[in-house]
Length: 183
Image: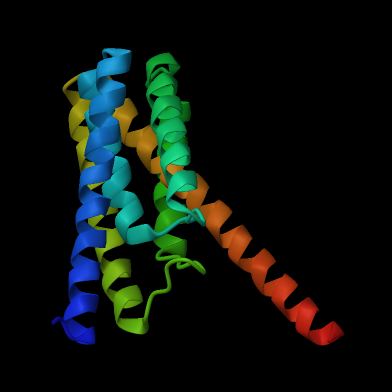
């Protein structure tokens, strides 16, 4: 028989494993479907790492999360294919870096962070954004535009959906207060 503490550890381990494996499965599916392996993997890897530590809007159910993730990956890869590397992309990237550094990490009703997790993740976001920024400059200098676009789009979408998470959190708090004030 497994005691409560061990059970929680196993459940956390399984959840962490799902967080790592599920994006890979989605990337394999879309990479195969779109015949864009390198773009898809670069995008999914970058997005998963940024999202892991920065936080964002969390879906209420696994089905919603799955559908949303598949649409996000498909849309991200399609966006990467149509965008051009240039000054506008640089501005978007720098804006997303600043936004993520300023607002991370974000927790939500479905994923609460304690003080230690917030402090640790804030430092991790700083490191991830530093690596992403160096990577973008380095890859741009080498003319690897598809990788530059993959990192920029992943970072931008992580920032965008983090913003949505912030808005949803504020909206839920406002509704919660309004509900209890009227009672």
